[in-house]
Image (cartoon, rainbow, N blue to C red; front, side, top):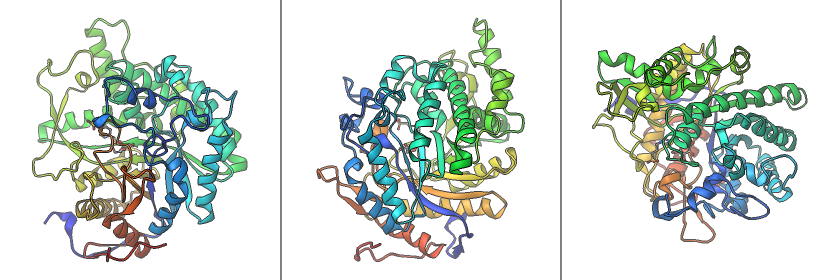
Length: 487
Ligand SMILES: O=S(=O)(O)CCCN1CCN(CCO[C@@H]2O[C@H](CO)[C@@H](O)[C@H](O)[C@H]2O)CC1
């Protein structure tokens, strides 16, 4: 069996916090209730022809806007240390700006936070998990440099409203997905096909916005609130197909996540050198008068460098990477034409319901080791890790995924990685973006035929609960799922 199927009991080191995550557009519903205004995912999912599988939308989703007490009850059944969730910008600020604060929207988040703290479950709050107010997108969204002020002004309101009780903040979830999937690959809202320049403009503005919000917290709230602020980056592992592809794999890492982590966590800051050089060289070849990758001014390099108290990592899978010999594979200019690499999967790797999600636990170990060595062992929170199925309560494949990935994480921790928290994506099934409700990530199953959106514990919920309770990994443990999961 693979290295990550050892049949022994493994202790989990003290101090590592365990939680689960969700995101506002994926679970809340109430898309136009109580004063919330339209965001870019409302706009995309309502467009014709419908872009999401089965024409699914987040209009109702898991109805967490009304079911938050049940959500907290599930957190208690799992025995979580924390719960990571995100705020809907246009639910709190319907005009996008601080001139109007929507009291009913704020009340929902106060109710959720207060209910969690009643049972000592820590809120870990993401300010932005992809649901930009539509009005801001009408003005260019993340490609408009003014987004720096829009985001910082929103952040200040949020810190004022919830910072007395929230001590763990993440500014932005997955910069790569915001910028590449949103402005480059025409996949996620606002689904623009501007790869090779729109995605890079988004990258620069997003990092400056993140840094401005970070420094504003430090200057205006740290003394009185004492919380911590970070960012959650998506990071896959890129494994060279053969020795000669080592450079291609490193290029992929630097373009796919180094673009966002290097400016914040590396010693010198700024975009990775290979990205700056490659995009500039290609831009001039292609007839541009300046690089398609916007430059940070020296002041901006300093502003962004070190602008996080910890590094949040969303990790799911790995890809085999090799040099792309043909220059006609991708449109030119484009992000993937810039990287000059191709990705593949090892056919022996098990696949989740999501076609991109392969089970490669050793890739998680290699990623954590690389982050430790490249960024001088930064404090790391695993802010997402999980597995999708088509549904069903006997989810042994999800259980095997969690056990192997936590095992791989423990190997990196044993070798010195400063991992402080592990977050399972997700507490319950939710709106899986372009795949709608066809790909399920929940420890709890959600019944979308039921207006009450009933949540039912899967077998994996019992196993995750036992890992947290016993603080050990036991591949042998078999829960008795005939008994209800209890608090
Ligand atoms: O559009 S398709 O499906 O044909 C292809 C998608 C390719 N990627 C997969 C990984 N995802 C990053 C992970 O995305 C994260 O992980 C979760 C599971 O995906 C999401 O639900 C979370 O919101 C997100 O933070 C970004 C999109």
